[in-house]
Amino acid sequence: MEAIILLGAPGSGKGTAAERLRADCGLQHVSTGDMLREAVKAGTPLGVEADGYMKRGELVPDGLIMRLVESRLDNGRADARYMFDGFPRTTAQAKQLDSTFLKRNGRVTNVFFLDAPRAVLMQRLTGRRVCRKCGAVFHVANMPPRKAGVCDVCGGELYQRSDDSEATIANRLDVYNRQTESLISWYTGKNLLVRVDSSRNADVLVKDIRLLLNESLGKRA
Ligand code: AMP
Image 1: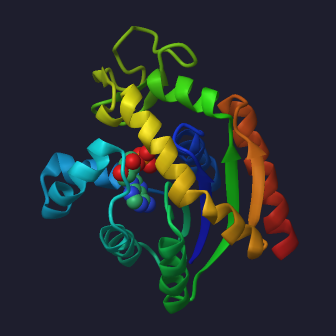
Image 2 (image 1 turned 180 degrees about the vertical axis):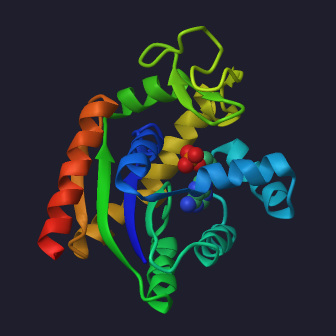
C-alpha cells in the first residue's frame, strides 16, 4: 500500500489535480472533504457531528477524520496506491497516518505542495461551482460550464458550496495557515516534499506532477 499526498490551501487545485491523476495514473482518490460532505448529506452520526465545523470553516476533530480514513483503507486492496487530497491537515493526522500505514506495510512515497498566492485562492474559491449530482467542479470565469448552472458531464445542477462564502473562505485560509502549513516543514524533514506552482492552469500543473511521479517511480525501480 502506498500513498501520495497533495498538500495545499483550499483553492490550490488539489481536488482537480487528484481527479485527473486518478484517471491516468491508476490511483485511488481519497478526499476527506468529499467523504465528509457525503456523510453530512446522508445524515450519518459522523456527518451530523462534522457539519458545524465544516460550516464554520474549522477543522473536523482528528479522531473523526482518522475513523473515516481507516475505514476507507480497510475496504481497499492491500496493494492499492492512494492519492490523499485534503488529508492530512494537522501534524497529529500525519503521525497517525504513518502509524496506520506502518501497521499495513504501507508508506507515503511523495508529497506535492501545491503553492499559490492568497489572491489566486480567493478568486478560485469564490467562483467555484460544483455539480450536485456527480461532484464535477467548475469555475464561473476560469472553467465555465457550456450552459450556466448546468454540469457539462451529467446535466446536474451546479451549486456553490456553503463554505465557499467569502467570510468562511477567509476563515478556512487562516485555519490552513495556523494548522496545516506546519506540514510543509514536517514532510520537508522527511525528504518527501516537492513544491509545485499551482497558480498555473490545471493542465500544466497535472503534467508537471505526472512527470515528477514518473521520475520518482523510475528512481525506485
Ligand atoms: P475540503 O473539501 O478539503 O476543502 O474540506 C472541506 C471541509 O471539511 C474543511 O473546511 C474541514 O472542515 C473539513 N475537512 C476536510 N478534510 C479534513 C481533515 N483532513 N481534517 C479536518 N477537517 C477536514
